[in-house]
Length: 215
Image (cartoon, rainbow, N blue to C red):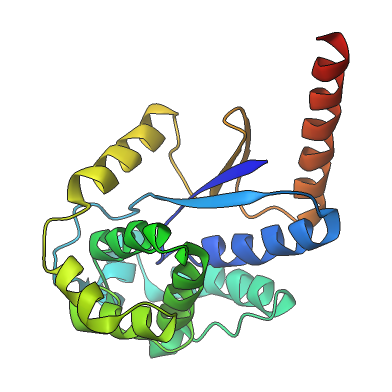
């Protein structure tokens, strides 16, 4: 089975969804390959990012409105052993460079490790993941060579590829993340409980068995 995961590294529900998918895969077993695909929640964000408080006030109307939603995310994170530390985050970054790093990591077989490291760096440590130097540091901690990664991020390598992958997601009608596409035809949108993923896996296996029997 191949699961394509459309996600953004500044989406807390994507972090929760990653954990729930992992639990489902551990329970289900089988031969599964995952690929992380780019989806920018804030594609017009300035390259240098913006003050997080100002961004939240503009998006939600007030910090109080966001804090009510934040409590739900923190509770969901706690159930998945994610210690969200939103108070550590000072700026909301532009995530295009982070998505290029994730694309680059796939070529080295370390995509999932990089995604995990980026989520942790942003949501737990409050690090500036729109910054090339920070991204290179995170990459090194996840097993990539720092100098080579920094050189990649300072080049145009992968720019067109990441834009094409993101456009492909929009052409599928994806408007929010996380969004999971299984074997190119089955989709789950949102950070559903692991049981939802397991049910989908079973359906895919059952459909495959029916097709095989009829061939």
